[in-house]
Length: 339
View 1 (cartoon, helix red, strand yellow):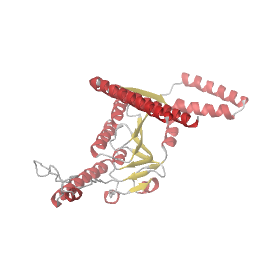
View 2 (spheres, helix red, strand yellow; view 1 turned 180 degrees about the vertical axis):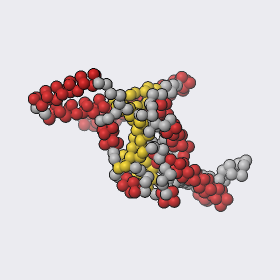
View 3 (tube, rainbow, N blue to C red; view 1 turned 90 degrees about the vertical axis):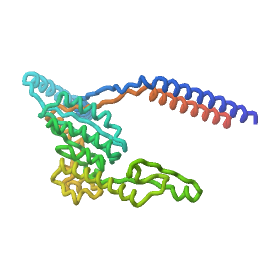
View 4 (cartoon, rainbow, N blue to C red; view 1 turned 135 degrees about the horizontal axis):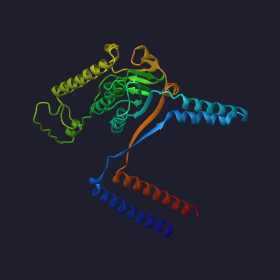
């Protein structure tokens, strides 16, 4: 019993210290909030060099010394030839977009597009590796506008979809001059959806009134707690249809070959079926395409990452500290019970 009381006291003291520490850290972060910086770092890596490293690693593991010596000799001769006879290769700039419901990666995408447009010419190419199931209309509208900057600059844009580009994801994909899809990637969902729970009847059953006051006939159509009306529901559906029409017109602008009556139903299709409906242009993975392009062009991966601000760093540190304390407490408890 004394053992359990000792540990209970220890746990209480440790928890108190941890809570005080977290409160202090959050307070400091709040005071420093105005010093947050959105500056980040642009990173450019050669995919050609990475592929060369992979190939040379395989050669070193598989080939015997004589074959490696022969390859080394051929490589030196090729390098000597290239120096004497320089050839200007087109450049391919590879961007990645992994989309969540808020299209949070747009902040990095806009920086990457700006960087590429500062250098790329009409003989170059931008390849976007896109993965997104869609999300908020305004967020994906902004992400799509970033890709439209590439098209407006008349630089070829190729979009590669290995897993999914649906709804807002396809809104982005359709801007590409060419869309490549893996055989089982999911594409389409040219539609709009909205849902909202309503607990009005539950509140009414418990004699709880909720007043929704508005100025403007359609300031609020459907609500979470208030009583919804047929008029409000009709207006909400009208707004959904308006958004859907804008979505369809946007897609039709960049892919006029589509039969919108067939593809704008909100359905999705796998890669091979999407090809038949002209939602994509070729069946290929992004790896396959980039390896092929690296044989004839200089391929660079471009990424922009933001520096974590003070509050984010403190939050990570606090989470790590809490995790370490919890782990040590658990270990102490185990030792106490087993010994």
